[in-house]
Image 1: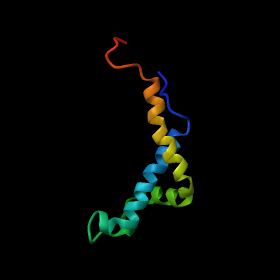
Image 2: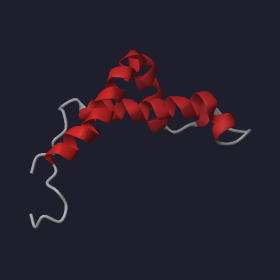
Image 3: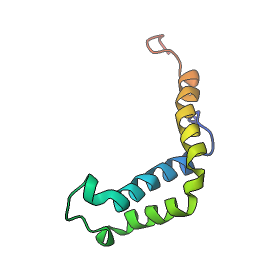
Length: 84
């Protein structure tokens, strides 16, 4: 069965995770630990941070689509307990 979300969902979700990596690098000392060193993050976090910096302007639309995908999915999902 196909998942009823827009084709932009994977890219939007990746941008959301990239935003989280950006936040960790930018505010890691506040969010995680006072001795956090943003220069010692792993390659995945660094790559996601770079991705977000290059595409941050797409975030408002991506967040809107991600939030709306919940509604789209709920409409396509059959009612629970109806026997299938």
